[in-house]
Image (tube, rainbow, N blue to C red):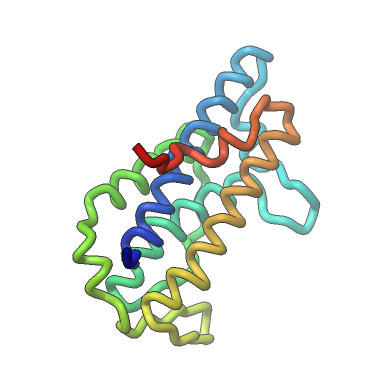
Length: 172
């Protein structure tokens, strides 16, 4: 059985975005239980030179739904700076999921071989759509989702690997 670009990208993004949505909810519940302000987590960093939690969630949403939309459009650039609070970050993730759920397999499978330009300031990096999604957006997505998960763990949120993985695609 051949696997499609849609399955490799959109389905994978949706699985882990489900995990992100779940661990954000557990983070909020933990804050309520401990009497903490969840917005204090928003600027938390794992290390001083790393981007904060807010950036990790914004980037996970941007590299998933934004990455697929960018591949379809032929152009992608980093997310704009944002000032979301914890609830706003949760909304970004649910909006990214909704965007991806609305995309049809043929729309993604039809962009194989399409040129995609990643722009970072004056720098332009050329990709083919499948190379962009598989070697740039997916790795970035996993990096930022993992870093957000790690920040919540650092803050004492009781999470495990299953919380990150989302709904597994188990054979029925």
